[in-house]
Image (tube, rainbow, N blue to C red):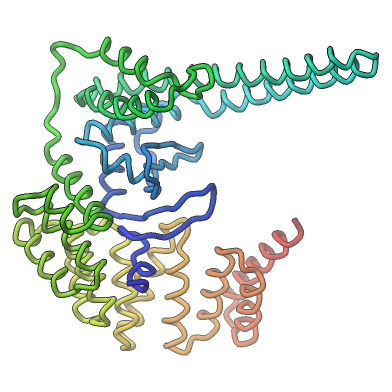
Length: 434
């Protein structure tokens, strides 16, 4: 099972990113759904046509956030607890609201003002203490810090309110039900009641206040659009998560009838327990229900890959690509499978796919690794070492990168490649000098 987890980088299973305490689950199916949803919600905004990126954070509480560079993070619990696509659309609209409203720039300005307030109060406090009034100095210091903190929290709540207003507008304009937002806030409201939170110590307004505001904006005659295709896709994503994290008894309770969601959940449940044949049987049942879902063939390919059946893995990934040629992760998986098939022709096919993938991905560690392996098999050792150097530079293993650069330089007469190697050396030296 561990090997499968390592392999499934861009699908459902884990790849830990130890930055900011995130445990990222890469799942092409979920990310594709969120990207499609965002295309609807960003219409007529300055984000329309932007390449927004989506990640799942493996956390057991409801949360979502967006970064200034347009990367969206949704917790696993948010996906599991959401009842319909309108719930997800509401959360996504809120996060889009932060970008549309320029909140990160405003927050930076506010942070600077708060920092200046704290500095001024500290200077006054030092002066008071030096003048023989330590009590007054302490009061100035604490008061200044408290005021700066209160202003920052109030500012944050104000921005959250504005993001809510944008979410309401985007959902109304695009035919989503505002009950989706209400569903999410009602779940958050239950947690607030249990904790008995003081609203003045919050970065967000109380959920009860947010729900009231949303209800005021519900239009009696609003024309809601039919998002049933999205809901079907979302139901499969929830089944996937349930299958991986829940027991078979729990899955049967959630899905008492034999439907596609139950079969899909059992695919992951059985594979997690090492029951490979049963997992494939359940996948075949899913394909009978819907033979045009590319992710069924993708999962099939991954299972075959992990079992060392590379011919069937190749066939499965080729089928997935036929259905959805725009999902770049499928090509990465196919390239890996082609490498393991161990023929010169497939090494070359794998290289072509990997070079294409590298151009379109921000962090193609696996692609560089397999590119190095392929070139090694073809005895193009200079290109192999170059690929490994690029990989190690991506993960900031500078000494390993330099080792491969030196190996490539010893055997290469390729002027273009030697220039690339010099560029890598420059980057290494620049990083080491910091």
